[in-house]
Length: 291
Image 1 (cartoon, rainbow, N blue to C red):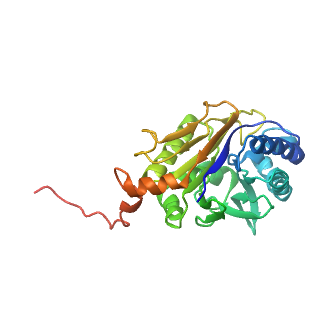
Image 2: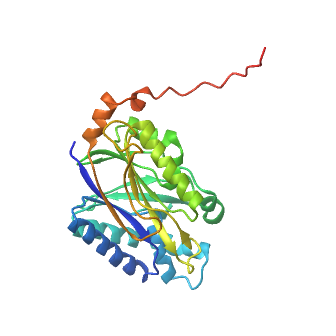
Image 3: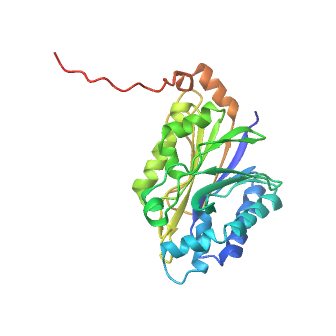
């Protein structure tokens, strides 16, 4: 498998002019990423929700959700257009979308010819359940790309080892994690979980967050984080496993080139073999009483 160059957006939430404004902004980001040699651009979870501010007079979580879900097809069309125009693989974050009678948080992965595959968020945060009524999505999948199989874990899902492990067992060497966190507690949970998933699976995990303040939005009012790429903590990799990272809470793009062959080497010759040594699902723990 060949190396992959990614552009990871530290995406500052802005009050864009609706779907058209979001599409224009995405087009600029895709153009810049392609010009700098990126083959895939990754945006954060709920990046497109910024478009709701154009349609909602004041911060209102329910109205913002309705504004986005009712325009999800148009937002997807803008995402596909950017990928096709710039001949780029695009992971444009996630969209709350109607699926039958439910709303799910869905992340598309878009090929340069406009084809789309989906990963749905599996585990909901309290905000998604209590404020938006988002329903849990389908189980993890892996995605066929020119660089091999890739997984995608949306924000909170990265905190659950079994979800990422399922993708790695299915052949994913890289897991994309678009995220949106409104506190440093939330961002650090995602960051530390992403590093742990890379360590325990001897794989790559990348994160792309929303950043900045948007007081006009009830859903995206405060955003913290930085984009980063993590790998195994072993021979041939940095001692802390951090391959690239941006500056905290600053808008920008982090570029990183990831080589799957390095993973094959560390899985075979590393100081440990986390990927192979993953224990089977444990049985219920026995209770022992000191004698």
